[in-house]
Length: 379
Image (tube, rainbow, N blue to C red; front, side, top):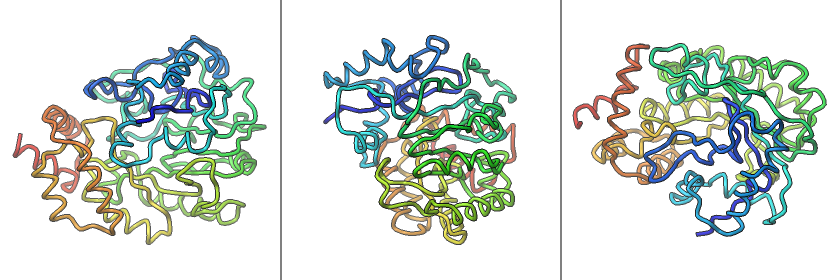
């Protein structure tokens, strides 16, 4: 299997705590998969800018390992996706850059802080300030520099995320003035509609991908993403749709835009499947069609305790046999994810304990407890 990836030659990422990485997923799954804590690649404060870190010893060493064709423990996330037939970030990056050993920073992804107004089931205190306020949560370090973009111009790709970007002071006003990138992508919980400076910025881009995160509709969605209000979400989504329809961008995506395969651009819903919303995928896909917006299905790989691939086979089979599927895409996605892993007792026990913890925080919809109750009967 080819393991070469262009990411170390073109890309840098800054995390909520200021630690730096080449990409979103490097070091996310380690060893045999039992250690799923994000590994520190470049510690906060070692470099003043992303450009400086890109030329640092860690990145130079990683580039040499790529050139030597090493199978890298830090790349297991992409290896796993490829093994089950899903497009990985490695494949996506490789498909839009000619393979070369020359290093030039063209892509950045930044998470300036964990400031957020949501407390989502798939999240944690490192990535959400709302989680920091709950019992038994550990507060992460705050970054020395919230963003490190000095000396960066002529970028192919800029991705920003959070926390929630549109409530972060780092993204107010001056951040967007004078900046540009050929392709701009971001994910937002859609609780806040952005200011005019943001739209001035993305109008300078060649194309744009805006993901509105939604892990279910109705009470299931509002449980999975604590802070979500469906009425507000739909109102803001309508504003996004109106803006796209009046802009130079294609709201449903530009099929001819080749910078970032699988060529996703425009306005889309990102739905992350987990044990709490498996039975809500049908309703969410139906809702998306009724509201004229594309919904992309993802599986939860972090935290691993919410990865449905580790459910007992009896539960997987029961879901496949009894759950209605919205269309072939829905069925094929669920079957592919179920087949990508085998029953893991430790992970399911972690899921059970986590659900008990959530019960102390929130009232959980019965639909979201179905898999938990089935697991309790088996464990």
